[in-house]
Structure formats: C-alpha cells, structure tokens
Amino acid sequence: MFHTIKRITKWAQEYKKRLYLGYICSFLSAWFVAAPVMLAAWFLEKMTEDYNGTSPLSRAYIWYSAAGMILAIVLRFFFTYWKNRLQESIGYEVAAKQRIEMGDVLKRVSLGFFEEKKTGDILTAVTTELSILELHGMKVIDSVVNGYLQVAAMICFVAFVSPAAAAVCLAGVLLSALALHGINRQSAYTAPISHKAKEELSAASLEYIRGLAIVKSFGRAGASFEAFQKAAKDNKDICIRNEYGFVPLNCLHLFFLKGASVALVAVAAFELMAGVLEFPMFLMFCFFSFSIFGGVEDINDAAHILSVIDKVLDKLEAMKKAPFIDESGKNLELQNSEISMEHVSFGYQNREILHDITFRIPEKTTTAIVGPSGSGKSTICSLIARFYDVKSGQIFVGGHDVREFTCDSLLSHISMVFQNVYLFHDTIANNIKFGKEAAEREEIIKAAKKAGCHDFIQLLPQGYDTVLGEGGASLSGGEKQRISIARAILKDAPIIILDEATASVDPENEALIQGAISELTKDKTIIIIAHRLATIEQVDQILVLDNGKLVQKGRHEELIRQEGVYRRFVSVREEAEGWKLV
Image 1 (cartoon, helix red, strand yellow):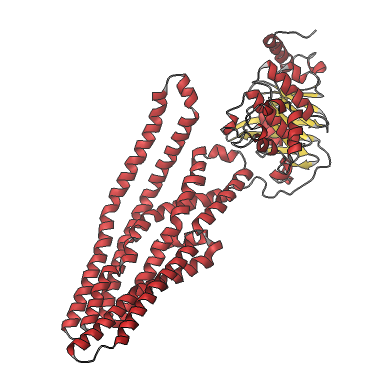
Image 2: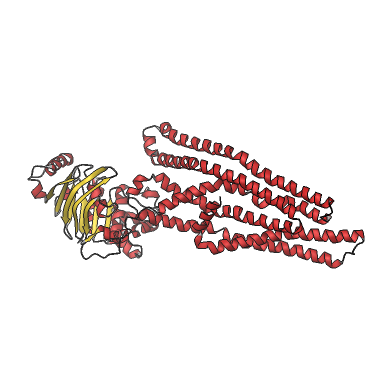
C-alpha cells in the first residue's frame, strides 16, 4: 500500500513541498480536533471539584474553556483549509501537464507504435486512466497518509493520560492495517482483470461509433451492437464480482476498529474503577471512542483503488518510455531540397513492403510515384517524412540523413496533402492557420484564395470564423481538400508530398484542386502519388513500383515505349478514363 503512495508522491514530485506542507497541516488539524474534547474533560473536572466542594469553580475557567474551544475549532478549520488548498489541486495540475507530455510522446514515436497499441488503449490511458490519477491520486494520499497522521495525533493524546488505552488503540489500528493489506492484495489481483475489461469496452465503443454509418447502410445494427453489448455486460459482471470479493475484508477492517473503540471504553472503565483514572478523563475517552478512528475507517476505499492506480502508473510510465523516433535528432536547416533513397528496405512487423529501393529526386523537380495498390507508394512518402525508420539503407533530405533531424525540424521543410483530409473541430481560419501558427488574417485569406476556397468560405454563416464539425463533416470532400491545400500553401515548405490528393473527388472539384495544387507547387520539390494520367504526364520523373521493388524510372515518353508495368498501367488507365494517347 505504502509503495503505491510513494509512487503517487513521485508522480507529483514537482509539488512535493506543497504535499508535505499539507501533511503537516493535516497533523495539526487532528490535534485541534482532539483539543476541544480535552478542554471539555478539564472543565468537567473543575465542575466536579466545585460540586464536591473540593475547589470552587472560577468564572475565569468558563471563559478560558470557551475561548480555548473556539480557538481550537478556528485553528482546526484553518489547518484543514490549508491542507485542502495545498493538496487538492495537485492531481489536476500534474494530470494536465502529463496529458501535454503524452501528446508530445505520441507525436515523436514511430507510427509503428500505433500498430502495436490499440487506439482504444491509448485513448483510455490519456483520458480515463489519467483521470483516475487526477481525481483519486490526492484523495488516496489524503485518506491514507493524513488518516494515519490524524489517528497518530489522537493516540498521542490518549497516551498522555493512559498508556494502556493508547496500546489498545494502536493494536486496533495495526489489526485493521492487516485487513487493509488483504484488500490491497485482492485489488492487485482484480485490477488487471478490471483494467482489461475497461479497455475492451473502450475499444468496442470506439469501433461501434466509427462503424455506425457502415452498420446502418448494411442494416446490421444488431450484429454490430452485439460486441459492444457483450463488452458492457462483461465489464459490469467483473466490477460486481470484484466488489463481492472485497466485502469480507472490508468488514474485518471495520470490525477491528470498532472493537478497539469498545476496548478503549472498557480499559478506561477498569482504570476508573481502579482509581487510576478520574471520571472526567473517563468521559473524555468515551467521547474519543466515537471519533478516534474516523481518519482510518475510510482507508478501505483508498485501498480498493491503490492497485488500480498502480496499474495506471505502470501504463503511463511504459508510454513515456516508448522510444522516440528522433531521440538523437537535431534541429537542422536545409541547404537544398534534394531527396534520395539508397538501398532502402522496410516492412511492417514481419512483412517486408519495400525491397532495396534507390532513387534521386533533384531539387525543384516533380516526381510521380505509380504502381499497383499495395506496392509501397505511400510507404515511401511516410519514410521520407520519417513517420517510420527504415530497416536498412538510408534516406537523405537536403544532403542529411533523415535520422539526423528531429521530427519537428524535418517536417517543417515538408508539406503533405493526403487523399483523406482531416480537419479539426475549430474555425476554418484556425484549420488553415495550422500550417503557420503565427499567420495573420491577411495571410490566411491570401492562402485560401490561392487554394480556390475563399469564395465558398465567404458564403458560410461566419465566414472564416465558422466552426467545423469534427473531421470537417460539414464540408464536401473537395472543399476539405482545398482547405488542406490552403494550409500547405500557408506553410510554404520547400518539399511537397501529394498522396493521391485528387483520387476521390468529382471532375469539377478536380479542376479546382489541380489549380490549387499548381499554386502550392511553384518552385518546390514535388512528390506525387497518383493514378490519373493527366497528373503524371508532364512530371520530370516517374518512379514505377511493383511488389515493393522499383522496376522502372524515367519520363512518360521514355516509359511508354518500354514493355513493362508502366505501359500496362497506362493502358488500364486509358481504358478507365475513356481516352487514348495519340
């Protein structure tokens, strides 16, 4: 149990000073919880002496005891306030920084990390599981550490009057600690099962929501809902079974504490009858018996969650230790924008995609990459942008091996326009501005005009301040594509990668997008992945891939005269597009 407390303290180490000051405030608060009871016992003793005629009751005693109680209550709330002020917000502050740190980690790992980890698992770690730490981390520390500090303060008061009664209290706390240890062990056993059930529920929910449109279109809502329903039921059953497993140990924990409370009164009664204890002190122990263990009674709730927190910390630490793809990279500036690959081979997991690829793309030229689906076209672009690292060979950008760059410095020289455009749930202006954070409104509008999207933006309710739905759901595919091109134009990077940017748009939008691309690609080094002949006819160089191998390269006029993949590709495209080359 205390091992996990130590880990939570380490997790919040930036705020250790506040944490320890909170402990001190909690300890002092407990003293001032006990002080009114002590003053009441003292005043009762004075009243008893007055009643028995032993010593007259001075009016000053009344004012002293009243003032002392008021002061104790004020100081109790003063220290409780500062304990909460110092400790309560730490979880939220640390979690906010951790989320930003996780975002930076996810940005700097290889995309292979996302193939090894399920999206639902990553989402759960950054949201739900970090929220467990955020919400319960400081509460657990408050329950366990401050709970034991409070009972220690109370036992010190009891020991001052009756060592035997203090020993009984201490025995009750130690026996309850054994039960809490059992709860912690039970939680360690159930936490991974519960954690897995929650991950599966998160993954099932995500898959169900993502595939809802397909599910509806095929009329298979029942079949799709079944997996989600099963995950929800399994999660419920596991949580209930886990709770039942805790019941005996919870009861044992409370039994020892309540038993110690009764034993405290019994010891005080024996000492009263033996003449060792005065009647007012006996009453004080009776009062104490109701509240002395209040701080540790609720620790069982904390013990339930400690192992869950332990697993969360394990997962977060594992994510933070994920190797950065650019760990040894530097912020480098390009002297030119030439790109080359030398004997590059690469594969995903156990399947090799590219085999010994070598080519050179001179600065400010346009290169098209063509080939059958699955031949490795998009993989080449991903390797140039260093979304992955090669298994063997080297990739050079501007004369530097891409492994010399940090991801940010490399990608600052590259703009990418994808077939599937993702726009953020934000204003259109901010989506375009994503290409250049410091851009002024005039620059944004200028880029939009070049990309051919200014006119339709002006027709929207709030123009450039119109907030888009998630993924840009309120726009057509062509409109989203032109906004993504505006974003790339604003970035003004020397290298442009177009990954089938016009593959899924209608002819009208294609003409507009081609115009936007022309504005984007002026005086740049261009790589185009394309299937349409009109896109690749005039390029400076065509790279032809087949089964992960570079089988041909040259200009259109050269390749069309050669037997091979390119000529077959052109024939198929001519037939598909309904025209022929003369």
